[in-house]
Image (cartoon, one colour):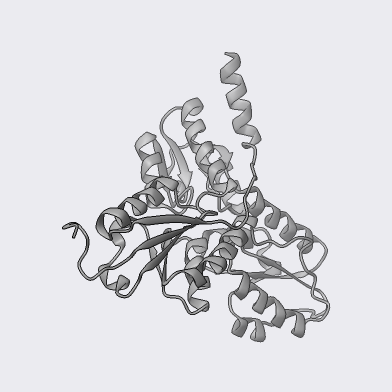
Length: 327
């Protein structure tokens, strides 16, 4: 027996969700920070974590990116990057007052929801925003039309919510919700408000949907699922919940060292996925851990769909890059 294998574990196979890890919005956000450091110099400041992953945030910090939760911590005239989660107009105005030079790394799919909120509010609709009221993305979206919008996060809240005019109601959703949970809430709202206006296209992002569907396909094939992600990452938590809703034990981990031997009793086939904000280097770390410490001999990938989505850089950053190249 390999002396490094954790006692009491008998895992034979690790099954990876082939569709896992960074989405196009996360790739873009990290790229924005790295390129901004090249053309703007150090430091650049980031309003909230650029994405919800400690490893990524620490890596960017080592390169010169300073994460702040309060713009008072940003020197006047400095470069400030808005995170992928987006911000409301009040934050934009505060940045202008402080004469900050802004690069907006908001995911284009979050921007889409912001624009829908503005449109519905102008048309006189009361907007129900389905999401988690303490999440950075939801706070930013709410800021677009605070007088015309309220947050609903559960079916219980959907049953109780009151609106000024039941015939003039629209809904939007946070982009990183559980498909199942959002569908249940929408069903309640449609029953209560038959004239409910739906967004022209589903607000839950393609990557969130695809990763949740990959977990649905994976859980019948494994005894336990590990989700690589961060506890403050909505899309990470939703992946764990998707597995648990289907009767499968699942644990959220940030690093391989978080894996506990007691989870793995009677587990022969272990599943692994990574949230849209978890880097592949940490997936490889977990794979190495499973081989060395769990004695895993077989590592296979479970294939569902492939993604081929790319987002361009913000205009203001593209302009800076062109100017530097021309200099």
